[in-house]
Length: 298
Ligand SMILES: O=C(O)CCC(=O)C(=O)O
Ligand SMILES: [Fe+2]
Image (cartoon, rainbow, N blue to C red; front, side):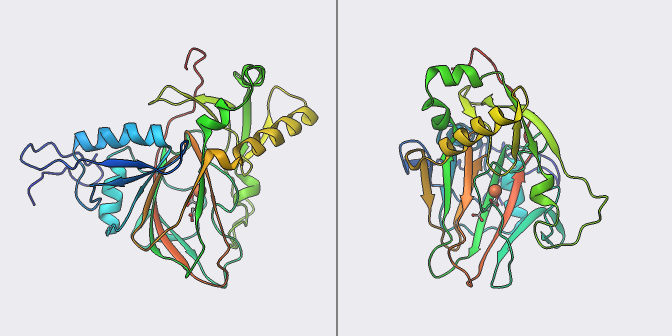
């Protein structure tokens, strides 16, 4: 081992100059969303330079895809810690033994409901929704099981100027209750409570400074400043805006594929078109900050 790493729980940044830096190369998947990354072995520690390049690229492409990666749970968590502290999911019933930060995504013929089967940004109901999510796929069905991603920069940019002005500065309620309560077939006590938060409808991305639409069909229930009828109509319009194929990409997984998505400027939708086949992956999630809107951002 040539690089030096910090101890458990601390940011995993390598500063040893004798260690060869990995240089990522990016190939855009579609004009608005997604890039395949080459030249990176995620099982190796990322140094500051590589981390910075990936941080900027994530904010630009919204989701980064890596192929043929072999990661132990420790390496997976170490990669996540390069980008921030790890997030603990408020309700996920299936965690990897000994690794409460790692969610197991597992689907087979007995599954009643899968994770992310409609458009969403992960845990947007939390007061500080996760910055990003890193999913490592281990087992794929013979065909299908793709995930769709959409750019929320493009969703906002493609609205008319009057609609953009109307939305900026509004806030919306994101509720976890209807999503998580009993949602994954597990039994939860009545007393269990789930996150609920208000966030700006249009948020400024802290890295790119760009504006991104931040409402989603899974969690967002209400625009605070509007009466119910108006709120419902505007939200429906915005949910359809997210679903435009032109702002999306579609990722076909192979065992060993990794997707690293930015929840601040993208939404995703997992397709369950492979029943009764199995699909399995492990997920590490990175903590984020409270979303904000800066009027002057471009
Ligand atoms: O299984 C997938 O492709 C994604 C599921 C999902 O929405 C998530 O893990 O956040
Ligand atoms: Fe998700």
